[in-house]
Amino acid sequence: MPRSRGARLQNNPVDGHKRVLLAAPRGYCAGVDRAVVAVEKALERYGAPVYVRKQIVHNIHVVTELEQKGAIFVEEVDEVPEGAHVVFSAHGVSPAVVNAASHRGLHAIDATCPLVTKVHREAVRFARDDYEILLIGHDGHEEVEGTAGEAPDHVTIVNSPEEADTVQVKDPSKVVWLSQTTLSVDETMETVNRLRTRFPELHNPPSDDICYATQNRQVAIKKVAKDADLVIVVGSSNSSNSVRLVEVALEYGAKAAYRVDYAEEVKQEWLDGVTTVGVTSGASVPEVLVREVLEALSTAGYEDVEEVRTAEEDLMFSLPKELRQDISGQRDTRALGGRTGSAAS
Image (cartoon, rainbow, N blue to C red; front, side):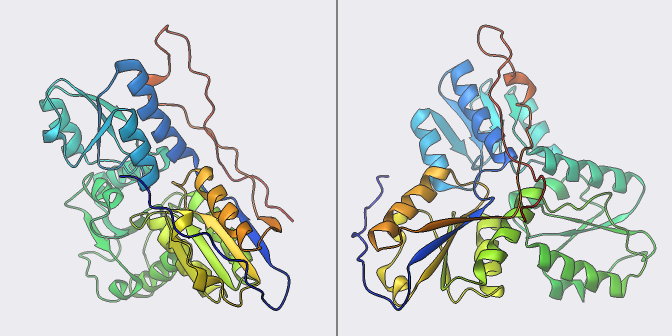
């Protein structure tokens, strides 16, 4: 569906110097880049159509662009013609989905983010050791469904800190927590602390499940928010980490914060009396959409852009094994980006 272009923003006067604080890191993480490239490479290798179960990543622009290249997005694998190629999204799938695809003779390409795969493996291991798993996350989110599906008899989903006060377990001495990777760091730790108050022997996972990209983007917007009259988060409504960025911005001092998919959704009234605008984007958002927001803001007089960087990212994930060579058999050399390095001073 074509985008509807909004009216050009007006350059109305305000008391003070207009500026933009541009959060960094922002946008694409390594797992998202890997998943999007996987669909593109599958189309190159096998030709259209290539089917994708669910949205490959939670961004309407990315999905629309891939559809235009020949990807067909479906809800479940039973919608895919037998023998066709299907890509599993970055959010991961349960063993039941893998088995359903196999039974239909589908050629499956697993684009699950490796950090989500890590959580799946933890769920399997703790279930094997007969632990009860308290999975902190949002019931119904694809990532949570996939992780819970690895050990359905051992997993209880905890949706919020409030649910931590009421969840019941069979043996308080054999309980471990895991989490959805795209949650708010602060809310997750509040949930863990409440759980630990009730279950002092609660075990931690081997490492923090909140993904580095989610953490980095939240840390960056916290630094921006304290100086911002307005924060604009570029990201889709079904993107958990994008929605969280709005919440974090408000919690850490932004006077107002809004989420948009596209620059034309920025409203003139948001800018009334605003001198400093913070801008960031969720981990599934291509940089072109941020640039369009910056261009729109520049027409309203916000031409001074200062990047506020709190970390460097340099992690690289290999493509799914089926796609690591091009059609000629040569190893694919495209780099996939994003990992925390040393924090900026």
